[in-house]
Image (cartoon, rainbow, N blue to C red; front, side, top):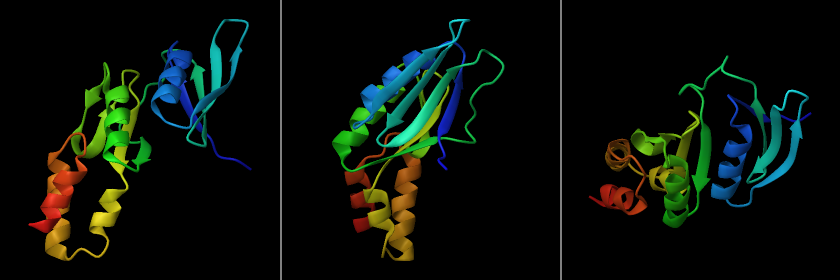
Length: 148
């Protein structure tokens, strides 16, 4: 058994898969199939997570109740993923964004968990307050907030 992420697009499945595999390191398009009607079904991997993008039409849209979560090792990774996914998209609070296709993402550095682990209640509150005030997460800003 395998669980995959299935994304329904209105005619932009291939474009979305190309963007996502370009922005997320270690990703690739595995297969593109076209039906008799020309609609594409694109199977791709994002850093080992298999996804399927389908040109299903306008019947369904994306909502903020579900998002793709990208855990980054460094600030450079956060910056690169953020820049790639927010192009023609919309920044949100605390590391969230909606890309140009309407898909919501969380771009979060591993450092968030590391800064919260073992932090006392006051330090954890400072880190979370700083995080919620940010759009793109700035690791050094969180480190500074914890140290205050």
